[in-house]
Length: 232
Image 1 (cartoon, one colour):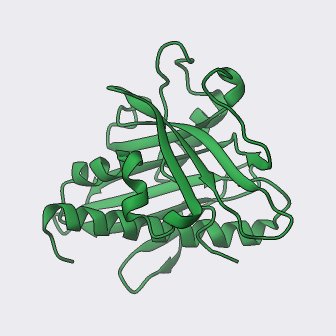
Image 2 (cartoon, one colour):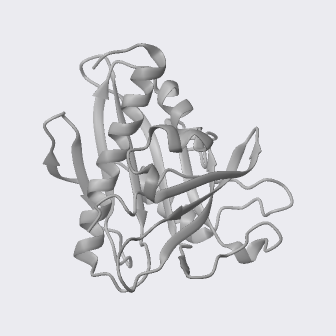
């Protein structure tokens, strides 16, 4: 099974006028859970010093997943790369199985679309629309670099067209944040929770999410280094 097929990006929230300006209550709750520093359990450390953690979400079929690493880089350089949804095809390692495009871009955020090609028998492709923003989603999120939330196409069918032969994903959120580290640098983390639908066993989904989120952090890190002349 391709570990990267459900790389969940990077996505989201605070919708432009005319579409609906409120984050859904369900996804707002998910964002608050992801942003809280409590109840994370470290499960692995990679050879390149990425810490992988999980958190139980009450009432959810899947855990939240977090990756975190220390850097001596300004967080906004990461944010610029993450918000460049239109450029994902140029630096994501799984770009051949992931189609990304920007639907609407405003000063407050963007609406994006992604379709994930699933090369497995009897499984549809996955697709979703999302809102992504740099702006805080509440008073407790001042150190959040950017965040995303999935959108329901039924809110604005004239903008969002659901494809045939695909499974549409509605519940999910993720955020990137920074915190000062004891070494004087910054800890940058990405957290997410999203169920990619269908009848795939939960333990396989959790494995996919864990490996995908690690790959995403590495891809973003490499792009930041490349854009700014840094070396690891």
